[in-house]
Figure 1: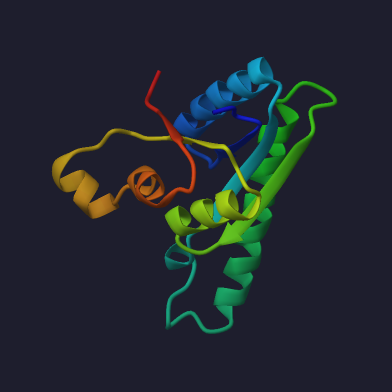
Figure 2 (figure 1 turned 45 degrees about the horizontal axis):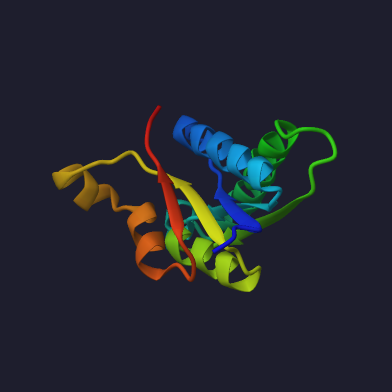
Length: 143
């Protein structure tokens, strides 16, 4: 199997930056295309009580997502061609959807490696991606 399209998940967590460095390094060594994906979790921006404020919060979340992806793009060597996917929905589902639509040969994602109650409460996007991805998944842990 060759990896010619590598989809790298990005967010504002330092672990995502480390995972992106790993993914970009791998992509460069394989001369692969790079896609950056960021998913906006609607459960973090919508509440039934918010009303019209939800639209403003959603717009802010879209702007923040664009900033996060732009920050990662800026770290890449000049001339690097990058596709970007900014999605709104459950992060695991949206990452998998982007991987299917592109279609990616590999997904690179960071994981804190939480266990027990903290994992049950916080969930694991990486695990959801691994279970449903249409391609191999490289999970990058803390440096």
